[in-house]
Image (cartoon, rainbow, N blue to C red; front, side, top):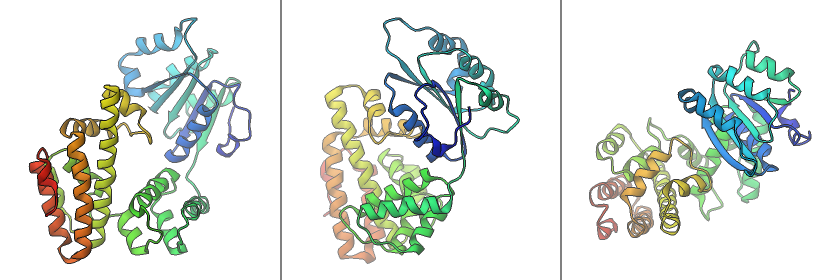
Length: 336
């Protein structure tokens, strides 16, 4: 059965247990998958195509075998290609109490998987396409309205143009703005321009992650390759602060739970799979006391830069140098 993305809220989908969500709009796919799972309960199990292809027999065993006393399960299979077509078709033909959601990329009309599942009475196929400019503008307007922030249509258009037709990208940019604003209720077009697209190749996120991972060579490479503006410095500060607070929250949870992988998996908002190795390394390098002191240092640095904006880049580079070389010494991170 084929279902349009906007029909998911109105159609009764609870009787179906096999879903194929495909297309180029990653943000919309994520929303649809969350809606499908929202009224289901059960143990969640994630697979990626590479894991399945490495050990097909183990995957088939997990899918097919279930204890009578085991709760229902929710399988999410991500980053799929046509290589999994035969395996997925075999699964779809066998009725199960488990919920199975397939997150696929692009699927050609002649695709064997797509054509067969569209005709199936037991599976739901949901295509996703790029969001229209108007739908993205509505999402952005809703965000600024809820946060009581006045915004121009010029700014809305800038955000939409940088979203590339994907509400997921737009929400990432809005999240950056939310973190940057903190308690502020006014933001200029110039600030948003810098915040949503730093002028050079390396983003503020990459600079902060590399520095917090104590990768000296890569951090200096990023600094030397970029010509940051004064507006960029404040964006970088906000990103450092956001990531430092995340590390602190994770460290505190690990102290209570003593299970790094579980803490990372259960963290909200979810940590993207590509970020996990970086996060794990940072958790090994920092203690709660050190990261609290770093956060204090960042706040002090922001105040100092606001008092003397002409020295912003020098102050930022000095601070980063302190992080890289004296991170284990709490007192070294304080701005004098």
